Image (cartoon, helix red, strand yellow):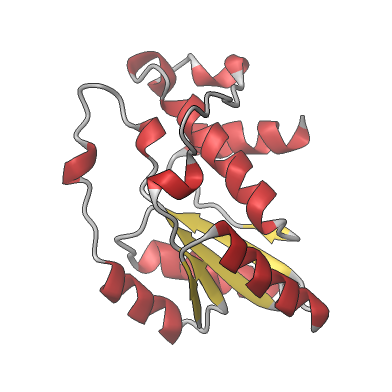
Length: 163
């Protein structure tokens, strides 16, 4: 399994996989993996030749009263779990790698980002849509697999992709 901390490195790895005619299945995560995440890796493997996971705790989806620093992290454990699942590569960027200084572009799906949970967590779903858009742009997957635990998030991503 290739561990890729930079956009350049994950793009190189994906180019290598594509040169071998492998379809890419992407599973974005914020890490601290559990069985549900591993099931998503298995589902991606059913629809693609190579599974690429991401581990990125996205600061833009945390509100001012939500403690980003308390989000659980255990990268070495996560990498061991991904290796055991046969994941081809994992993208592990830093916030600075994902959000360059001065960057202010956002992706918004206003019909879904301001209702239900979005009304209680202003900006949360803009952060989700923005980072998923960035991850899609960086990895260019043939298929992406998301859980259904957060149905509003899943609906938002589906609409963003459709739009």
